Length: 134
Ligand SMILES: [Fe+2]
Ligand SMILES: [Fe+2]
Image (cartoon, rainbow, N blue to C red; front, side, top):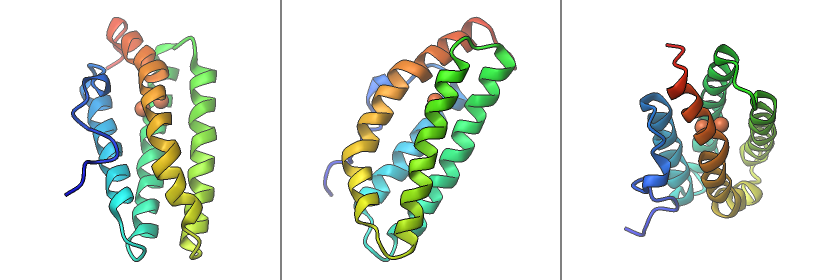
């Protein structure tokens, strides 16, 4: 078996909040499965990624609102931007045009996630640890 697209064991993906870290590991697993998916399985798996990401971002948006996170608008805006891209690509894949979605999974999503986790999610995790909201 070839190496996964994103290494789930990388310490930089552990931000110290169990629920956030667990969601991020599920996200990594879905992206890795998409990278290995055949054409028959790809569109449904991409839809699963869209649904998972909707819940992932929604939960973080709730945490930001509830805790008065200072960078709420910037972080939420980034979630909306990426979700719009994913929905658009998922629609194309569902219509038999998976090429752009496959390229996005391989070439853009891993680096986007690594940067997002290291910056916006890391800042949110630090904020929540300093100011728990339950
Ligand atoms: Fe996240
Ligand atoms: Fe985030």
